[in-house]
Image 1: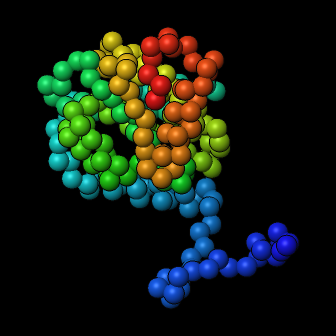
Image 2 (image 1 turned 90 degrees about the vertical axis):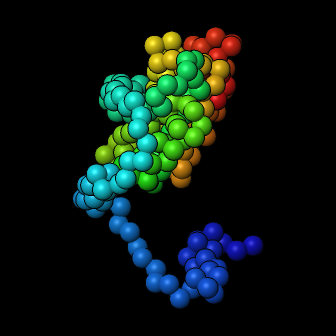
Image 3 (image 1 turned 180 degrees about the vertical axis):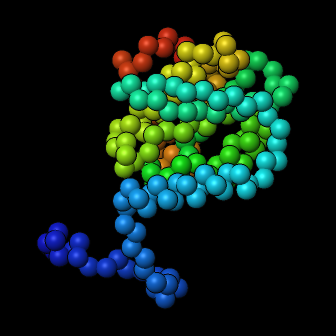
Length: 191
């Protein structure tokens, strides 16, 4: 049996098609992350907005008292109660949402005929785990509690995301499913 420290020091086997590409090391520090997030926010202005939606912005409070923003996108003429998708963006838990996330959410709202809630959870390294997870779960609680005022069907609320957001969605769905972790009635959705 090979020792763990020896196994960890070896390179991963890389397919020959990819072996010719250079390896980049990314220092994950606050200055680099802040700079990248500034660039990503800039891309939002450059991205094309192809759909016209009723968009509302809200600031929510998480379990630890920290605040975060959400964007509620609703197609015009959508009948209530409507299904909803809480979307958690990717970005290694440290990058903000980009124009491609906005475009995807707009497309989901229009093509699926649902309300999409984009959650701008707090980012690492400034806000370490479990801040992002707590924000995402608080957004689900907010949506379920506000079903009537938001025009949502409490039996058709889904969570989803890409990359890091997919991991958050999986965790939120499991927590919502577990007994004793929420105060929803037994008829509430089990994400």
